[in-house]
Length: 223
Image 1: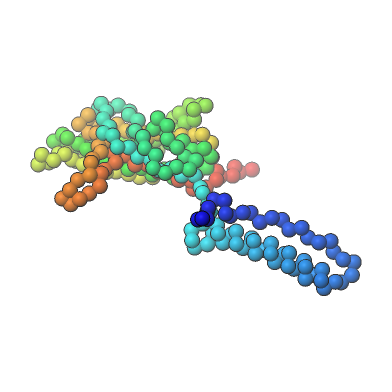
Image 2 (image 1 turned 90 degrees about the horizontal axis):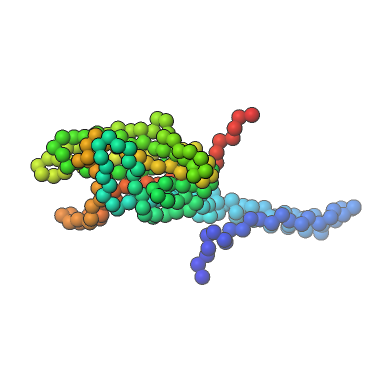
């Protein structure tokens, strides 16, 4: 049976040290050394499994990878939630109604990319920003998170395309969520998904891809 990387690593047990003798006793010293040697070997093995060059196979930090395979449209100059409907990988990070939610507080790295399409003969602008909230409280746009791009115009009967992405570090409380919003200066711009194609053979295209990775525990407040 294959080893289970989650349960096979056990924390070392505190050794029960023998009571010291009143007089020097080589057998006591040898027994004590044997107990301590075994304990330190357990510590070495545990830390090696966590931190060695194999990549810390026993660590399971929170993470989530999500995507969407729907064409997403909007009206001009309207704040629109970017859809995420598919969970690709997840551990303590999940999506619900396109909210990327974390179970544990911490600093997280949010990365995303979006496939934009422009059917118009004029290029048009798109803005993207983040909104953070908690179901037990309010949500608010994250100051400084808006990015601006221009989607190329159609040319030679072919729609203009642009895939854009970036990443942010976010301080998240337990059960906080983040949403990705967008707007465009023209309804001719949309977020598109494409089926697999040939000439050459290529896989399908997701309309949106987003990942959320745990970076660190929350900073300690200054005293």
